[in-house]
Amino acid sequence: MLPRRPAAVGGLVGALVGLGIPEDEAKYYEGEFKSGRSIVTVRSAARYGEAETILRRFGGYDIRTRDNASAVAGHASSAVAGHTSAAAGQTIEVKEEQLHARKQPVQTGEVTVRKEVHTETKSVNVPVEREEVVIERRPVGEKATSADIRAGEEIRIPVKEEKVRVEKEAVVTEEVNVGKRKVQDTQTVSGTVRKEEVKVEQTGDVDVHNKTSTKRK
Image (cartoon, rainbow, N blue to C red; front, side):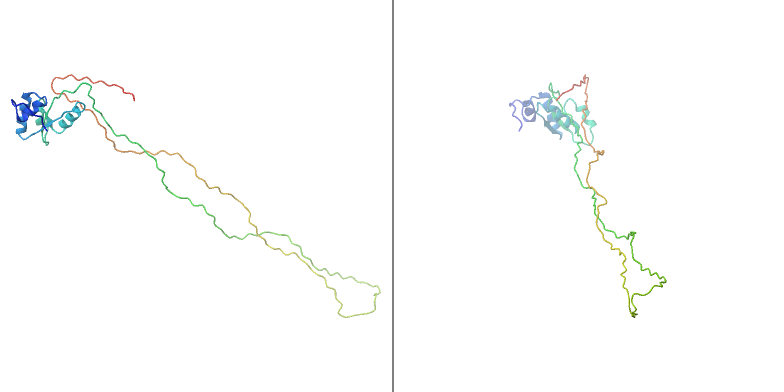
């Protein structure tokens, strides 16, 4: 809501004068308003400059910069009512985006270690012994101890040999240790970031001195 103006000056001019704008400037803004333009007023001690920059960006102007208003094409013009001089010590924050990389472990594969049983044939040479019967004949001319001659007399001689029996036993031939280790790699990530830049525009004969200071946190 616009503040009231004394009866001497009424309407939009009175409201603008009540905001501290000179009467001649207020009449100029009234004329712009009657021509179909919008009037924007800003009252902020700390962020007036930021608001003014935004309005200028979209075609806004005031009585001091009205000659440059025609250079802005394709935008609806707005008259900015207010003082254009920045307060002493006013600060504009200049921001930019920065990339921050965060790491997260994800499973990229799997290793399975299992045992399989294969069958193969192996041969082992084993020395064995066996008995053989040796019959040796030699002539004898001596007298027999007995005069009986009997048929079917025989001698039994056991013959032995070694037989090989195969036995199997399991023995450990190898050990396999399964473990994990961390390997350090370097990956490059990229992204698009935005940053703000300060543009200083001069109108008229104005001296601007740039000063850079270092601020410690």
